[in-house]
Image 1: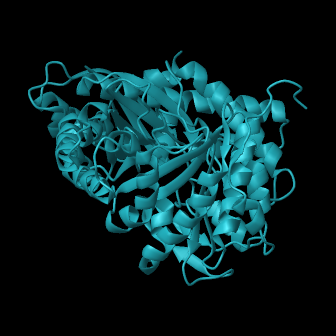
Image 2: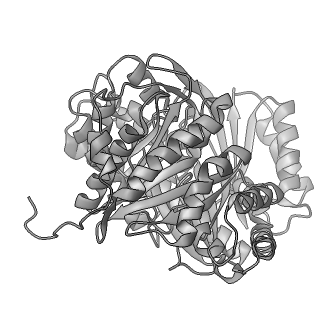
Amino acid sequence: MKVVITVIGKDKTGIIANVSKTLWENGVNILDISQTIMQEYFAMIMMADISGMEISFDELKKKLGMVGASIEMDIRVQNEKIFKAMHQI
Amino acid sequence: MNQYKKIMETIQMIDREKLDIRTITMGISLLDCCDGDGEKARRKMYEKIVRKAEKLVATGEDIASKYGIPIINKRISVTPISLVAGASADESYVAFAEMMDRAARETGVNFIGGFSALVQKGFSKGDKILIDSIPEALSVTERVCSSVNVGNTHSGINMDAVKLMGDVIKRTAYLTRENDSIGCAKLVVFCNAVEDNPFMAGAFHGTGEADSVINVGVSGPGVVKSALEKVRGESFDQVAETIKKTAFKITRAGQLVAREAAETLGVPFGIVDLSLAPTPDVGDSVARIFEEMGLGAAGTHGTTAALAMLNDAVKKGGIMAAEHVGGLSGAFIPVSEDEGMIEAVRSGALSLDKLEAMTCVCSVGLDMIAIPGDTPSASISGMIADEAAIGMINNKTTAVRVIPVHGKGFGEEAVFGGLLGTAPIMKTNPFSSELFIARGGRIPAPVHSFKN
């Protein structure tokens, strides 16, 4: 299953390091990374494959939520199908 | 537009513009639960509802988490109770409503619809008993919703039922007077009721439906408003295009959720209801869309045209996005549930008469409107007759959900809380409808040719 992980908040150092460390520890394979500045906010978007993941989807969300809290960024994980459904015919 | 911009657009819609799936509603047939013994019938019904909908709430929550899109309500609709309770020898159906309330609590849904009767042409024994039971049923239950269909395009309007419903609404208002007559907020009088509507309070599971089915209602007035902010000052061609594209995206999210819910629950997918359903939250208002289109307030001259275009463009965009479209599909204009509508009433921009005109071009009718508690039942019946006539002649669903707030008058407000919101009490026409309503009988079905 492919997921989209978005990290939004004030730009700072260590965002990619913190998020990708958690993903690596849990067997999530990062496929692509992009960063943009949206208004005053920094947004990092990751495409990842979670088929080899050792924990459940909810646990991944919880762990990334904790990472988000520690670096004061808003992190969400969503199945990629929602984006495909809304933006592709 | 690259894929990352699209991802951010979706996240912005959910985060800032309140895009959500308004409801996943499971329709459940109770036709196989009839019994001559009311107690046995209720046991069978309770057991079936709880068995079928056992995983509904959990499934809804899982899907919301997986896709990161809120699913606000999980609900149940059942076969009109008048049809299934009619087999019993019971002389009141309040116990059936209590059974529905228990089943709703057990399954964790916030509303269960179907305490209903379809009497467009006449009353069966069950219909009569059910309608008489409505006031008490709505006063002793919390989550039960009731609806009565009093007319349709093919059979005309049952004016005896129209008269009766005026009284039923008044009695319901009195019995729930401690809470600003909230019982009336859970009672809808329809013309041309649809069998697959997922929205409350008018949802019931029609007899033409499968044993159980999943229907989904989408929403997103805030998303439409934000999209229109980008085409300020442009022509209506641009406005219509923008609404269509936005409705397409919203509906695709609904379609995805509906399919997934149906597959997970092992229940057939029914329809997606393409609706713009507002909530009392700021940023989730249909009235604010009118303002974005250039009107000073909802209710001023031009509002009916704005609503007509909005309603049509939402359907055009949504129809291609969903496999099956149904329910009420269009823009809702419930006064108490729309922050912009509430303000428009308070400022005097929006009157009951204008709302009636607006119902000619939108998906439902006079919805969530508080009126003075001393409004005569014949005047309420008159409102129902007017709305039913609009529906009957124009071949569309119309409805009346008015709340004559016991003990309160024009200028005061009724507070229902939660999704039902706050309603400023509106002025009604002081002249009598008494003799008109007292006639009873049926208004014949209209001719479908010579349309002018």
